[in-house]
Structures are given as C-alpha cells and as structure tokens.
Image 1 (tube, helix red, strand yellow):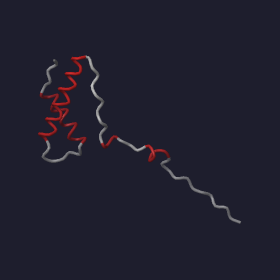
Image 2 (cartoon, rainbow, N blue to C red):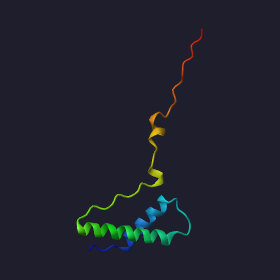
Image 3 (tube, one colour):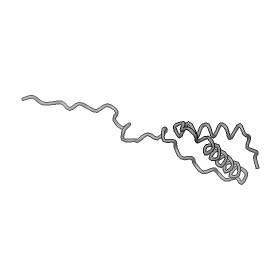
Image 4 (cartoon, helix red, strand yellow):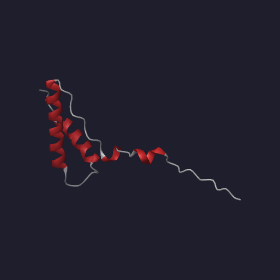
Length: 80
C-alpha cells in the first residue's frame, strides 16, 4: 500500500475546507475526511480499481438553463 504523507493530508484537507466555504472550527473534520479519501484512493490504486468520482463542489456546479441565453432578447413592437 502507498504511504500517505502528512503533507498530502494537509493539502487535501485545505482543499476540502476551501470547497466548503472556509468554515471556522472544522479542521479536524476536514483532516479526517482528507485522510479517509486518500486512504480509499491508495487502496483502490493498489487493487487496480479506479477510484469513485468525487462530487463536484458547490462552487463548480453551473445550471445549464442559466447559461443558455445570458442576454434576453428584445421583442420588437409593431406600431400601426
């Protein structure tokens, strides 16, 4: 099994913390989550299994309908 360094955990925990909106007092939860994710990825790599895809962060999700037509079209009025 691949060894997970403290620096790897620190980087992942920081990324998770940022993705969650930098909430105060959650460092232990993010550290544990980072360790768990890295452990699962290392075990999957050792077994030759592709890791599960990660959920997209709330910040990276864009609704398709909002991007379809960013500028509303003006309707022309007929004057008679």
